[in-house]
Length: 347
Image (cartoon, rainbow, N blue to C red; front, top):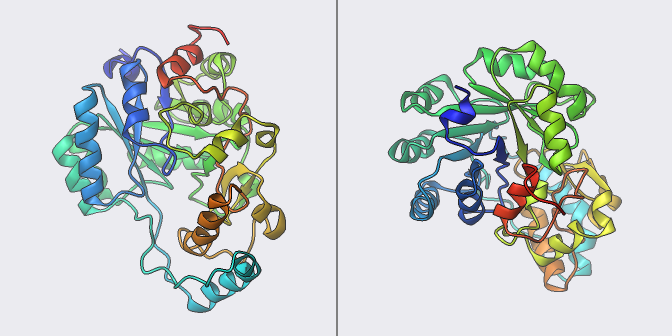
């Protein structure tokens, strides 16, 4: 029996966890329709995570994937933060804003004892990680309640490392994917390749199931990934226009317009490479800039600009996360979108 069957999924389709773009509603809708819903926990403290898990269980009894980050917290460098604010100073002046105080905390915390304690009480069927794996003792606690552990690889070397260190399945994330790259063994972006190049190499290199991510925008790309040896696919961008997502109207408009055809990797919004639709900030400062402080410290300085611009109906400073193929974005319920991706409906 495959792991898809063990979880009781109707379709081999996982919803990508998208912090800041979705919550419980999207995850539950996907789960009820026969896919694997995901709850992004990277921006949730223990109390918020507890509340979200209770909310999910109030909506469905279907399996859930809880996703966490495994980044290393950077040591804030006051001079680097000042240089970053200086780069943004003309934009603050444009909106008549004062430069914000340096961040008091990181905003996104890696998986830790507190988060693990919350999950232990709820025992989600799947726990996935981005940017590697947690410390061995934390990973052992997750596995102790029988959770299946997934983690993201962007290269064959990362896939081998994850399989050797306890991952039960590998998410092969191609360069097309929207949002943050899962790269963790290197900072060299020249190592990043597309899904069709990465997927068969990872399938050949490891003995655990492989999940394809990046560029999965419709039923044909789902079928293609499965034909190349993936046991399942993970889809993010194609669910962003669904009413259950929490993105704003400006982001929705960008996804369904010609803007979404032009994306790039940028570190301006968080300090780590992530793919999104080109914005004014990306055009004028980057999109990749050495001035951006390390993840996740870049976010705080951009946040007031984003708020001011969005209040004026402008997305110049908004992280419009999207993959390279947004052609499958449709403003339909997530359950309908899932069935279409599975080949059960027509556009």
